[in-house]
Amino acid sequence: MRKNLFAVVLLCALALAGCKTKIDTQALNALTSLSQITPADIKTRSLTVADSVEQNHIQGTVKIEIDFPESGNFFVINNVREWMSEQLGGTYEGSLENGQKMMEHYKSETLKDFRTNIIPDMPSIEGISCYREHYFAKSEETDRYVTYYYSQEGYAGGAHGWHISLGQTFRKSDGRRIDYDIFREEMKDELAELVKDNIFTQYFESDKNDMENLLTMENNDFFPLPVSSPYFTADGVVFIYQQYEIAAYAAGLPSCVITYDLIEPFLTQAGRELVNITHVAEN
View 1 (cartoon, rainbow, N blue to C red):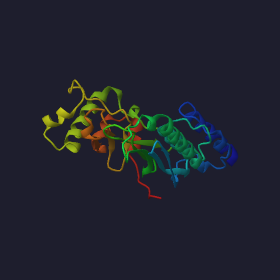
View 2: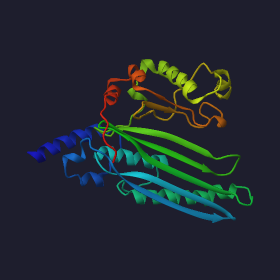
View 3: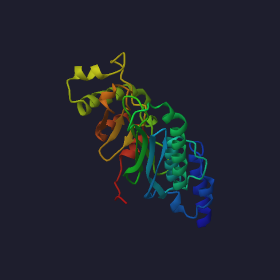
View 4: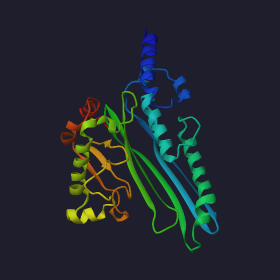
């Protein structure tokens, strides 16, 4: 009876996830219990790789740090691992279970990029170097979702480097990546206005007119939602813009947190179900 129940639940979970994500069949074949396909705490292991290359007296260094999901709901950890690989370039073809091997692949790809593309184009200035660093961390977990934070920074010549910062929330029942489709379509324009108001009040401390001078959009009356997905935290939903997305480099990465009581009217039913949460203890 238990085996039959397991088979039914597995087939249902496959149906939910099949059209949304690439399934790691090697890991799927290793499933042995219902606990691996039902909501559970995500257990992580800290992994780090780092290396460097020197060419033309210029050094290039790479570092990748990951809170790698080791166990929990199969579909959640599979989606988290796949998302991590995509942020790093999306070229890894091995098993997503092997976090160390995945990281070694992207380390090698970065060093190759330094040797063939970056360093040859850099000016011959004493002491100059290039680097690229990636950091993934599990930042929030409840009984309904888990949120991961990702940042990347680097320098490859020019006046300054770059910095990317974003988050991704995954629904624990089936691994679904949370995106703008959890917001009601007919209210997207109003949501953008809410984000705009909170960006002004939370991120920019200067006069509103001064802040608008930093915007790079030709029409400041149209304020777009961030390209990166909004993500759930204990305090509310975070909206973050990348460098140059809406403002000059000097403005950094404008962001705001909109509390759940303010955001709830904009959410679909699926979104509201994530809001009604009970926090679980950290690992």
